[in-house]
Length: 212
Image 1 (cartoon, rainbow, N blue to C red):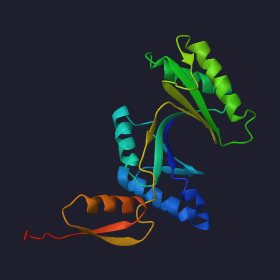
Image 2 (image 1 turned 45 degrees about the horizontal axis):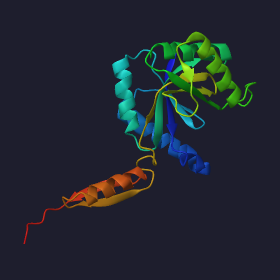
Image 3 (image 1 turned 30 degrees about the horizontal axis):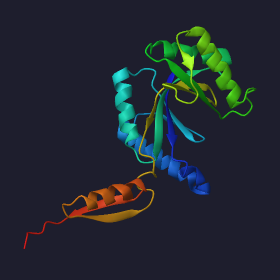
């Protein structure tokens, strides 16, 4: 199974009792960007979208649209496997075999499920060892790797190589509404972008002044 793994701004996690309303607004904005029929699954600090039936082009277009949504920190295209260290390692190996030009790697693990018997460092070490056994042409470089294998252990295990950076900030329309005066220069649209990134809904007003 494949899923889009969406990380959102850590600032949303600090909103206490209002956190749910910020998350729901972010889900609304994501659905508006990619289509209201999308099923966005909410988890602690993450959101998921199942993409099993979508083509590579459709997934790529979806990632581009989600990365433009304010409040989204990053998007990863992940393979979902059982929480079994052998299966995680084999999944990572299979992904790496599709990238024969890569010579060095490291494994970065985040363990959301604290009941999993191995800690993050142990998971990274064991997954790395399995990859080295299955892909003998590659080496470990923890300081300057060409590629990072991301592993997250939560309800399932998620393995992904590419993480696409997004806009971050706060969900659009989470901070009220403001008027933006556009005069034709560069300063006002940049200011509008920065305000929108902080969650302010923008009402743009343009005026044209003739030269003296």
